[in-house]
Image 1: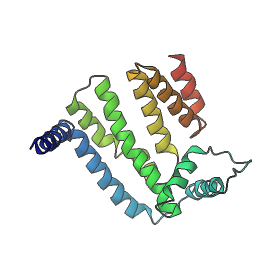
Image 2 (image 1 turned 180 degrees about the vertical axis):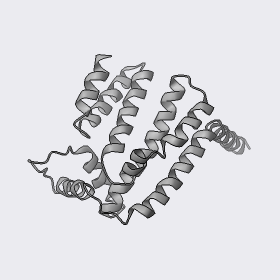
Image 3 (image 1 turned 90 degrees about the horizontal axis):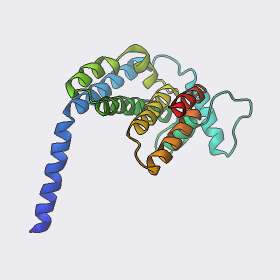
Image 4 (image 1 turned 135 degrees about the horizontal axis):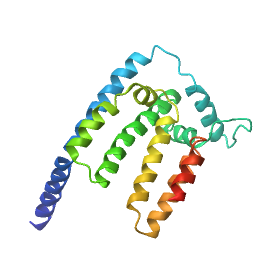
Length: 194
């Protein structure tokens, strides 16, 4: 009898938590639909740098990294991990797409941390998730959305950091940012200056 009561209490808490973030769930649902529709249209165009990132990911799986490569290894490493489930091109697009959705959720969390209203955040995030550069990069298989999501995650940890564990998390995120895009070094310097 008490086990059933506990399960009901857990289910009730999950529903209450989901309802309190219904705006975010709505924005994420619209973002998924936008990306699916845009991906169907975009498939007519070549992938561009996507294939370069795939080649780097393949090299990483072989245990090497191209010495003359100007691209950094964190995004290709995520593509290599996703390749365990998907084919190469789908893995690159999935990592970029999931990163863009995580970026939208982190932007919502940053806004809530700064005590912005949920309604204002939903109204702001609806057009943000669909603007041309962000939407385009989210299904293109490039490192940009991963970079943005990691930067937002680092800012969120910086604003909420209260323990040594938070400082370690911030350090790991800054390291990942610096290994994703060259601009990560400037971001790291700005964050660490605070």
